[in-house]
Image 1: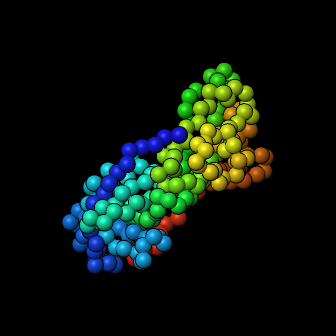
Image 2: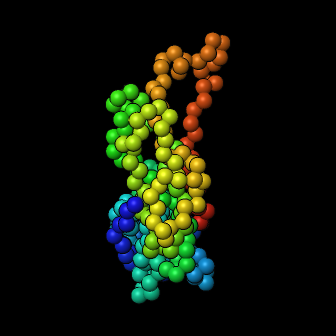
Image 3: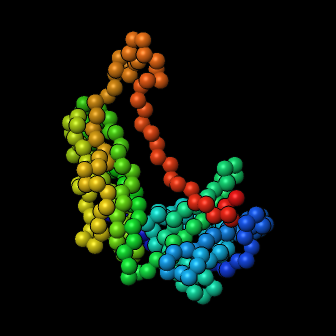
Length: 221
């Protein structure tokens, strides 16, 4: 489990909303929103796009960030962000305001480390399962990521499950303990991967990739 350094971002309140925020973006500014039950109503703010982009590249959804809003401090978690499809510039961020005395739920990424003997000794491969695990903890206790050592995967069928994670006592894992994180598999032969006689190639099952849900704030357009 990792803990990363704490980041602070300066923000100012803004009155510009909707399509008018495009002018802010042209000026290198980033529209964002602070929301949650610890604020009376969502607060529209502006941040420096360059500085915010640097921070977001170094944190996860479980990373606690301090927003300095004109001298008023808010502890927040990143809940959603948008990026321009062509320019790849950050265009909007949603921040959830949290209390350091109340637990929150967050997705923590899983990182595989080490060398699995099943690959070098048997020519096997590793099949990933979960890439994120849902946990609950005080905001300052949320792990940045879980490290999973695959050096114990020696034979086909060996796997690592959510229940195998090393989790601090002050963190509760909410994901199903029987969910698979990674499993050692035999290599797929050409004969096994070919479609059956008379069956179209499209019948072969393919893993589906889950995409994060996008927010619905009017500023993001």
